[in-house]
Length: 87
Image (cartoon, rainbow, N blue to C red; front, side):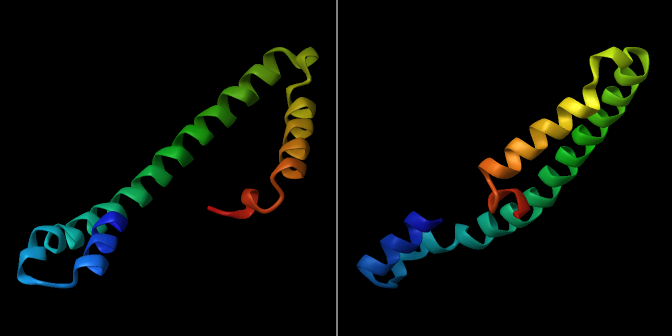
């Protein structure tokens, strides 16, 4: 879409540009619908991973999974302090 907008900006908005401009609302709508779906799938898989991690931690407490996860989370926050807060 950005390339299409750049092309229109360079050549001007003419009738011949309909080939570029007509698909843009459809692409925008697709993006608006796809983003929440990808977020839902991501949340589903994170939930599955948490459930599996709890089960493994209860079966094998000597693995110390929760402590290792906390360490990894701290390292990730230190490495990417601003990006971690973004959705």
